Length: 101
Image 1 (cartoon, one colour):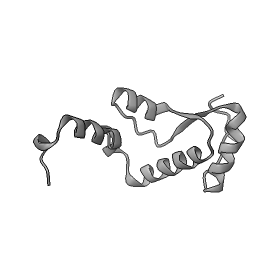
Image 2 (image 1 turned 135 degrees about the vertical axis):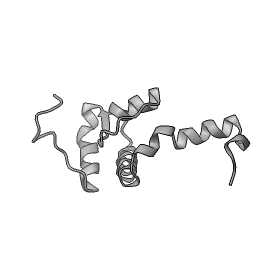
Image 3 (image 1 turned 180 degrees about the horizontal axis):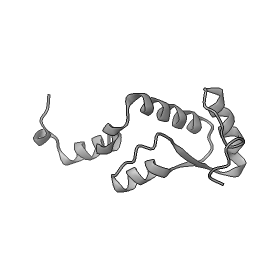
Image 4 (image 1 turned 90 degrees about the vertical axis):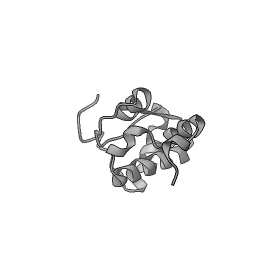
C-alpha cells in the first residue's frame, strides 16, 4: 500500500484521469453500462461527444448522478450508432418519448 504523500503529482494527475474524485458516487453496475455504451460507440468509428452530467463533471469536477449518458452524434451517423447500441441491449427511446427535441 502507498500513502498519498508517496504519490508524485504526475501519478496523481494520471490516476485522476482514470478515476476522477467524483467517480465514487457512481455504482460499478452503472460504470459498466456507461463503459459498454462508450466502447461500442467508439467501435462504430463515428465521431461523438459525451455531454450532459458527464461532460459537466469532467469539466468542473462536480458530478450529478443522473443515471444516463448523453452522446452527441452527427445526424449522418445516428442510425449506425443506434443500431450498434441496440444490438448489445440498449433501447432507443427517441421514437416513443417526445422529450429533448
